[in-house]
Image (tube, rainbow, N blue to C red):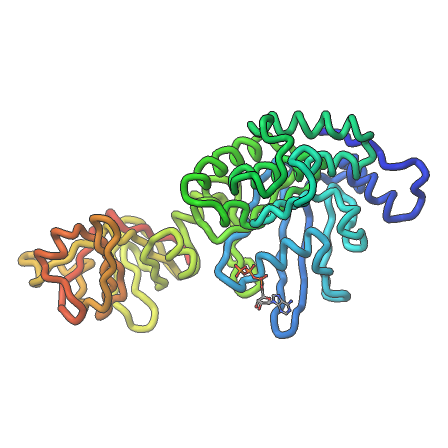
Length: 380
Ligand SMILES: Nc1ncnc2c1ncn2[C@@H]1O[C@H](COP(=O)(O)OP(=O)(O)OP(=O)(O)O)[C@@H](O)[C@H]1O
């Protein structure tokens, strides 16, 4: 574990001592990493999210608009206080942070729109962290120069933010946050303001930096790809609560809410399983699966697993065959996504050629089939 320099010897108040202990890492009650229950009440909105992470772990908070991701991040940074008496807690490396002011927390933040100091050069923006930690001006600048070099920005050290591209500015913001040697790194939609190409480059850079980062990193994003690429663990928040968490691959394979299913591009249904059949809730049809289960279950399959026919397929068994009506069509490159209702609400992907051959239009009746081997059932 990295050690940071202790802040001014003369600092004797409780906050400063807590800060210094937190910066040294693990000097609290011996536990390492993040242990938080973030309870923030704002009018009718209530955030209640438990978040724990080990040092070295990257956790992505993912969720729809208004779910509470930013509020959670602001609570971690100390910009939104935990609601008093609501049972919340916030400990980092065993040190309670609830009462510590934001500027004293060993927390680095990277915002979507960089928030660099416009009047300072890239070097001085990055040197700001070490300076706040008590490093001399020359030490701070030397350290900042190292960080800029590590992020491939050495030649931009003298540039002010307005002369940097979005990707460069975001890398300076990352260097500035890392140079404070935070025990908790917070990234708020760090790639959202970048164009598609820059986004790819910065995402790759961020992935490398996060892989070698020794403390806890929490990333807030709308983008499932960013979350899957950058995080070890996803925490999905909807309406102020955690609805699912786990490694990205598990969540993608076993979504438990409609939002997550849409995010990872799956059709998702809930039902009661009995052997290889899942009877859908609400009087829906049954889906035949290869897995054998009993009790509450989910069934998922990708839109690409659905085959559409304009006539009921001759000789087809009744398994996973549904009569549907086309309600919407969307074209993406050479693919068409059909939104179908009827015996089952289902999304189907097909080629533009197949869509033309089937003469797919809203209102047209089609038969949809899915092989049991292409479905995936898991306990509900
Ligand atoms: N200053 C505020 N006062 C009262 N309510 C607020 C305030 N800021 C946000 N909210 C409410 O808190 C809830 C959570 O907002 P938050 O910004 O944390 O969500 P989010 O998941 O980050 O959303 P987005 O992805 O759109 O940024 C929303 O219902 C929002 O309306």
